[in-house]
Image 1: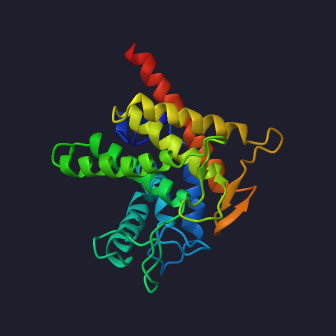
Image 2 (image 1 turned 30 degrees about the horizontal axis):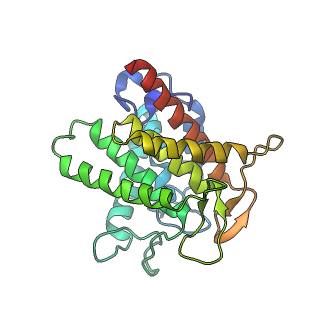
Length: 268
């Protein structure tokens, strides 16, 4: 939020000349994870739910810490490589190559709820931005095209199920019993704003993102700051009124919208 130049959505992410200033708070968080990380672990962290992808979501923080902390660079780089190998080589996959959300030894599972779909769309948009802003954009043009297509498969489907009154996305749309979920609504809105900043969307999608954002903002408690209603991160069919990931999604949404609007200002 405070240092957009360090985001993969910036024009030159992680370029050496923009690493300063860097968020010392992030490095402190990574240092705490490193201190409690088991030497036998292949992941960045051990999480309660055991999800295969959750520890990997710390990857950008670990990379930033490695780049900005010379005396720890070798140690952190080793851990980064171990996590990458774990995720790419050891976590089970579907027959067509999709990485399971569950760790080795458990049946292959893919996200079915809207938060899961929002995570997938958001994650693919980050990979897409990384490719486009790297020196390999031409080489990976087919992969970038696939990612763009897959992101919009999810976006178009979610928008088609937006509640016409609340303007929230349902937690599940193939179940009779569901509820409007502010968490997934925030993250899908964020994804649309980021795709728009990359020049890969249209104003119809942005208008939908604006509706989602308005609904999400109106659901933030002005006293506590908690967003609700949201899905319970540990019980994906349960509605709750507090979710750490939901709070993070609001910040991502606001940062994405800010950068999108800033891009429009610069273009004009």
